[in-house]
Image (cartoon, rainbow, N blue to C red):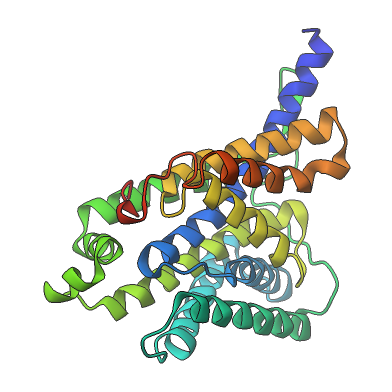
Length: 299
């Protein structure tokens, strides 16, 4: 491969890693709630949007430091996730999966409308965490923000491994995911575990929105596409398998970038859906999924 061709290829890989890490974070949010409730939370994309928009407001509007604004934005969206569960999911007695999914769709529409009213229809930009001058590697460039995205994803994955394997709360969530009735008989409050799953999911969504906003800018309507891509990645990796979501997210992101570079940028958004359809036809449980009974097996 000629040097120019290799440089272009490497550039597309960097772009794909940037996209894939964001998709992986969104997919992990889907997996947490799915593992605890068996429900796909279609408001996950709105958590991403709220995290990004709140971060913009705190840094550019109020002049807060990035670290302080990061913490407040994540906490804000986490509280939104808790309120969502307490006000819309928890009150439902003997809920069906379809009913809960409809509730999450309704909440998604509500949050989208609220975001439009508060932040308007325009795109919002915030500065990069540590400058916007790219690093040059073999002729290709990679933004420092992309390194932040990759690093934060790595930290979250490690934190999840520790939480779900070494803490009693994490083990309780895993128990509820495997068999909620048995977990209840063992004294675990399954309702609290569901609330915690929404809190963690919202927090992860907020982090995804915060770290990607300096690169793509954020607006009230971006949650639908991010949520759709994240859901596709979650299915490709195997619903409930967060490690699978990370691998699938990076795979989908890289394939998107390569297709955009070598075929046409018009097909980039269709690639994730095409991969989703192929996986559903060939392996409905996902590339790393096994069965309904082994949800949260990897975490």
